[in-house]
Amino acid sequence: MTDNDDYVDLGPGHSRDGERLQKVLARLGIGSRRVCEDLIRAERITVDGQIATLGQRIELDDAKVEIDGTPVPVRPDLVYRLVHKPAGTVSTASDTHGRPVVVDLVPSSPRVVPVGRLDLDTEGLLLLTNDGDLTHRMTHPSFGVEKEYLIQVEHPLKAGQLRQLRNGIDLDDGRTAPAKASQPQDGMVKLTIHEGKNRQVRRMCDAIGHPVLRLVRTRIGPIVDPSLVAGQWRELSHSEVRSLYAASGSESPADRAVNQTRAGRRSSSST
Image 1: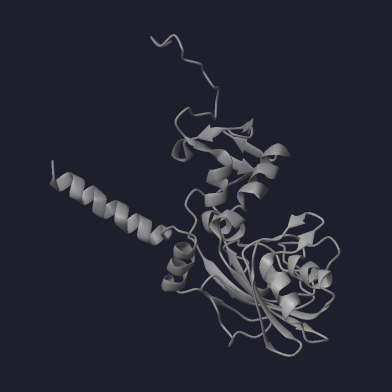
Image 2: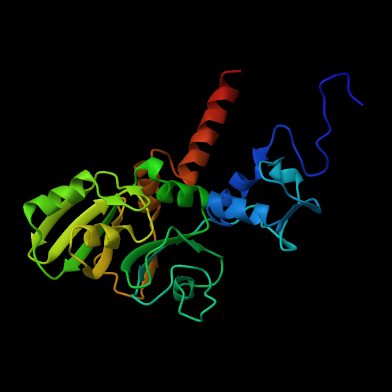
């Protein structure tokens, strides 16, 4: 019972002051917020033994969260891996057609997921991480994180066609945002975008009459590594992780923890 006439018992697994479940799952590295929302809708998530609902708030320290009956680790170590995805490799954690998947290029533990996707025939840099917050920031267009591509086409582009790429192209699912486009040499185009429409770069090139012969992602935000060859991977440094968060207008989890600790010390010393 409570003296508050407006009090409503939300039931087991629910917290009025907690954090939204999909945000918690994303932060724990289960996947992007959209993926986590889909898992909740599919009734694959339980909280304290009860099927979770979209928008549900929880206090993670007090809740038992499971996916398909398997407990979700509450405090996983965050890992950040940079892969040069080869052409012919799928940018997913599994594939029903038996094709090679990008997560098989890195150790299986801890579990990581691709940050966005590259087409089957596209190669180049791809991030793999269990940091759901970074995944959200790298893939949602509102954060404006740039991705740069080197595109091989058969014929040189005219100035007007480069201008079209820069100004935006009308596609079936809407007009693309303004992009950076240049032609380092005949038959080679450098394109920088911050969106992630399905097969966007290929469709943009098709729209101006220059089908893609080869497509390589060469940069993610501030991250470049021309020495990383197809099939290779490496861990990101702390400074690289920090630079990715800075590119999305935030600070890294490590910096956030340090700043919170410092703030706590200042607060304690002032009382």
